[in-house]
Image (cartoon, rainbow, N blue to C red; front, side, top):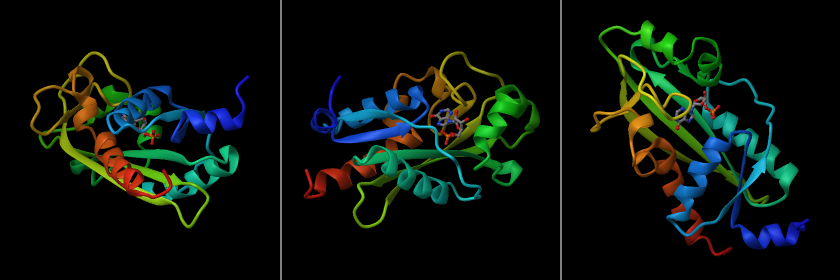
Length: 192
Ligand code: IMP
């Protein structure tokens, strides 16, 4: 078994999550910036808040307490314009309950939506740092095959296909935008 010191040396930062789909994307995106991200399996106790930033901030402190290595977490919300921003911080719950089919059915003419990713970083020093990535788009009229989560129904602006069908999701997504900001911060920080 590899020791903690080996793990520390092999990776620049850990991504704490229970979602391996997300980790695969995070790892591929950060690789573009020569940052090596390890996976730290973590089932967070989520605080109730209507701000995904507050949720991410609390979660990364919790994750750091468990892994004791520089760590990032990510929280995501899908904000649908005609539903006044719902489901937003409740996106996970809505996905589990009514799912993509339910959302597609719920919407009328105005199908505008925005994906927001908040990446929180903490290394035990100072305070957690937060990085946001937003992508505007619309909700498809029917599900497109492939992807995970809301990928089959979210069409980013400027594209004619949903995330599920895009080859370049990891270069345009809300996650990419938040992680690109994090990468810039990390590469500039003198700790590396
Ligand atoms: P969470 O913050 O990871 O819990 O994400 C909230 C909800 O958004 C979950 O249902 C996720 O499956 C979904 N989600 C997060 N990121 C993506 C994505 O990149 N594509 C599609 N769905 C996503």
